Image 1 (cartoon, rainbow, N blue to C red):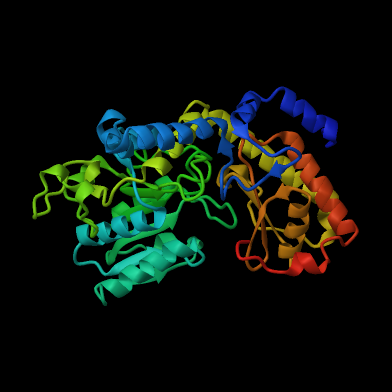
Image 2: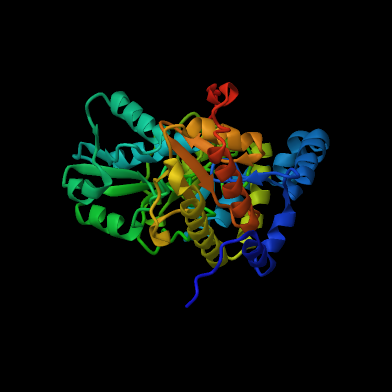
Length: 415
């Protein structure tokens, strides 16, 4: 069989037959930009503009405090959580929108330790997303010797789960490399040893199929501003399997998690279901905008999203190998699409400057120290031809040493 010629015309032909192509019109995308960073911050859904106006001017401006009832603000966390549940293989009543990913991780990691008494180990991997490790270190210090954080390389993680492990905390898809854990295998091994598991789904939700209940997951957290397109700083979400909800105790027992918050009693009584994981007042504006992104994601086929994502990753890798192999790039991501999330990460000693040169051409990826160039694939609005144009620009930048300009070496506050 003859190999397909990888030229711009071929990528244009893929766009013409792409069953997800119409979703691009649902997003605000600057002209002449190629956005390969939706794995860090999703694009703006067009419907979010009107939603923001409705919430700020109508519900808040005119409705004032009445909108907690008349516009049902009080049930926003549960309503959106039930929608997210459909994206991650959970049931209604198992997911709720609340706080940030970091706060939710602290709540659930602490709850898991409390639920598994007599065990002193929290297990994770070195190189996990920094905030996850920082939160776990903070919990370790807060509990003052009652638990200790232990890390083990992923190739030795299964063997590191033992009878002293209270909870395993891992990110399903690694933020740097896109490497994806076998959630079913690891959860089963943890349960066989009596340990619980908290999964961070920040780079998974809306990017790959997730089946929490199918694998008998215990707890999970995730963010709303990546593939869910909820906007910068959008609220996070958390998942608690129904079998754990009645006994769950987390350390931030705020009034929205009370069984009867407006009874205004002095003593705390946790709500019966997933609402007990709430703490403070809902970020109504943020949650309302997140709901727009969640609705948009829920209207698409996750199977088609995953199929396009894997195809894009394979084509991007093939293009880089064909056109940029002589420039010293390494591949940090797996070539196997089945174990790779919706991104491809390259390595290069001059990765930061190279990425700045791309960004100067309105081709937006990002850089992760010390030498990772990340390119995220968001199938709802990314075109196949964008991949060609990105690698075409990358080849030009490398061939002509255009990255080696003083401005491209100046570190920015956010990379």
